[in-house]
Structure formats: structure tokens, C-alpha cells
Amino acid sequence: MTKQGGMVCSWSLALGMILLGCSSGSSNGAGGAGGAGGSPGTGGGLPAGGAGGTSAGGAGGGVSATLGGCRIFPPDNPWNLDISGYPLNANSATYLANMSPSTAFHPDWGTVSDAYGFPFSSGTGATPQPITWNASWGPTESDPLPCPTGSNKFCYPIPLTAPIEGGPSADTDSDRHVLYIDTAGAPDNCTLYELFNAQNPTGSSGWTAANGAIFHLGSNALRPEGWTSADAAGLPILPGLVRFDETVNQGEIRHAIRFTVSKSYQGYIHPATHAAGNSSASLPPMGLRLRLKASFATSSFSGPTLVIMTAMRKYGIILADNGSNWYISGESNEGWSSYMDDLLAGLRQVHGSDFEVVDTGPVLTN
Image (tube, rainbow, N blue to C red):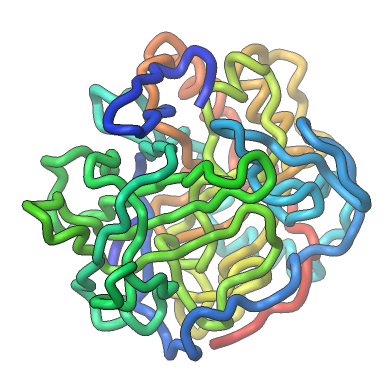
């Protein structure tokens, strides 16, 4: 199966929901055997250490970025760690040789009007909506949250007006992600809800989707081993997006960036918890972390392109899904319109061969 903020972001307030910004293709593998529902695993997936980030400091690592008043995971979360000094993965050359190293990078986002990129929204106090699953692995690999009436094991407080990736006219079998932050508990304990293949809500029946994942942004807990999410890797999508507010307004991205490749191994590295590949161990596993080589010259670049390159060197990129080779993911935002030509031209000068794989832990299998 294929699926692949800010100050100037067009903010609007409707029905108690703040539209922050506002999709992109990738690939969610059919779920593997699921564990018992609800209890997330533990661990952060990366060694302690590293520096960088913004907002709030913490012992042992990076600093959390914020969005809509919410910190996006603790400072020592894998997404927020500076990996510029991490050792190379022993299989770095092998993985890269099988990741189309001559292919150029591509910014996989754009404007809201073009319905290109990942939309997301935030708010609090939304009515919990029952979820009907349209995939067999939906109920076995989705986080339970019972309805107040007890009538359904799955009931998420995502407004029915939340934007859907690709817009309401997107093909029903496309990714159609929904990303929503419940800001209750801000700044340290917000909750991120993500749906895959969410269909347009009709009447009072709630949401229909293939998978639902809940991420408590004050915790480093992982999804249960073997569980997918709105991403094939079992990872959250929102923390890895290139966002307009960071890239343009703040001039600094303080977290790793999500990317895709066309072929992956049937294995994963924490913080990923799920694989959607094949049996060749020479292919990259989900959760693989790479960084832009220190030898790559960035002196001729400026603006948002340089901001992204700097983040890819400091925080790296994380393999999150099957999709087009070396596509990096970002939010859908009208503000991008005057920057996309330069971003396309600049990032086309970066290729897979300009990266190296870092060692962030063992490869696990479902």
C-alpha cells in the first residue's frame, strides 16, 4: 500500500481549531503482526549526547522545537539530537550503494492551494470522534482511546474539519494523512494524533481511516514493536517535516528531517518500530539515520536552502517510508510560493552520495 505553525503561516481560527500550516507522498506497508494494544514501548533509540535545538534545554542532548505552543518531544528525543559527531554505521557504504546515490534531493512540499505537502492543525477541546477502520491492520496496530460512551474502542479528539493531505478531492486510496496536535497540557505534554488514509467525514459517523497513532509529546516512549503508524516506519510524521516557520521565519531547523526511498529492508532501527521492505539486508532499514557529509561545500548556498542543508548536517535525516528516492518532506504552506524555485534548484545539487549513515542502534526485525 502506498502512502508515502509559524508566524507567517496563514493562521486561521475556526470551530476551536487553529490551522497552523498546512502534504506529500510516501508508503505505509501493511501492518505486521501487532502486539497487545495500547502500551507503548520504551527507549529513545539513540545514544545520549549531542547539542543543539531551541526552546527548552534538557540534560543529555538537544533542545525541543515548539509548534503551536507545544514542545515536540523532550530535548533528548531522537528527533531532536545533534548527530553530527556520531560514529559511522559499519554498513554505510553498502546501504548508500543501494539507495540510488546519484539521485538528487527533492523538496516534497509546496502550497496549500496546490495541495502539495503535509497539512497539520492544532487546538483543544474537540469532540472525540469514533473511528472506523478500512484496513485489516487498523484495529490491531492503532492506539486505543475509548469513546466517552464506551461505544467504540477508538475515539480520537480530531475535529472533523481537520485538513486532509491532498485535500478533500484526493483519491480515496491515496495517503490522505491527518496530523493534529491537541494542545491541552502545553507546553510540555501535548498530544499528537495522526491518521493514515483518512476519508472525508460524513454526517456524525466520525472518521474512517486505515491506521491511527497517538504520540504523547512529553514522552520518549515508542510504539509497540512491530506496529506501523501513519508512516510505514511506525514513526510520527509531524516532527520530521520541514516547516515554514522554522526554515524562513526563524532561519533554523532544530530536528531531523523525514525522507523516503523506493526500496527498503524488512527491518527497522529505533525509534522506528515497523518495516515495510524485502529480505535483502543490503537495503536500508526503516529508521536509518544519515547526515550530510562535512566535506559537502555549502558556502555558495543561502536562505532556506542553506537552513535545510545545515539541519541535514547537524540533525540528519531519518528514513520513514517507502516512496521516491531522496524526497524530503515538508508542510503545505502558501508562504512557500516565493521560495520553491530556489529550493528546487539548490537541493538538486545535493545527492545521496553526499550523505553518510550514522550508527544509532541495531537493526530489528518484526
